[in-house]
Length: 231
Ligand SMILES: [Zn+2]
Ligand SMILES: [Zn+2]
Image (cartoon, rainbow, N blue to C red; front, side, top):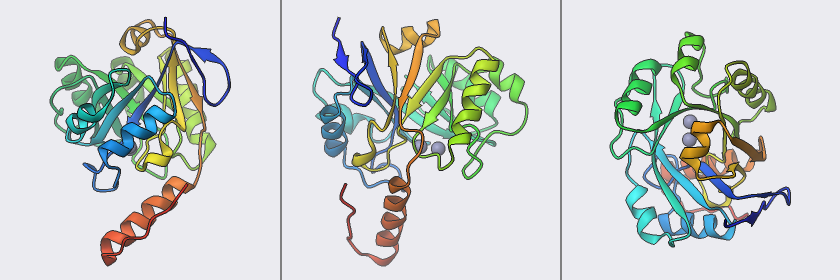
């Protein structure tokens, strides 16, 4: 088995995945597919899920440039009537709708449905029908490194524990410098580990520079400028 050192804790797990990465196919990101791949490789990730907002655009471009040893999971970050939902391992985007119907669509497509930053009150989040959603969904993202407050991730972790659901971690990167800041680890390939409830999350819970980069990107877009933020 291919064992990589955990880049942040020094621990060893067989597989490390960043399960939410955006590219320039999302309006709020300017990450070129080749730069996303280079960042993922430099951080020793085994895989990334490309999850642009309500589109599968970007997945093919990342796959084309990725080396064989980097798994590229096809995904979408779906907008529901409540929070965001990650649909992984789908080859077409599920339609937007209420959380339960989106989850059902993801399953019909053979995919995995994960609540994304579910209780981040500064972004789209979940507030009602939570028991039914918990009964339908496959996993909870308990560590999203774009949550500005640690307690939003803590609430997600408590929810996963309460409902005995598998956990994931992800950077939610919109810029290559963010890739791998939070991640999911497991001892077997991702889908198998999720089915067995044998995943863990690692990395950083929160940080500010990603949001600063987003603001700069929006400013550039609106003013037609080209400032960049280096690491
Ligand atoms: Zn989101
Ligand atoms: Zn996202």
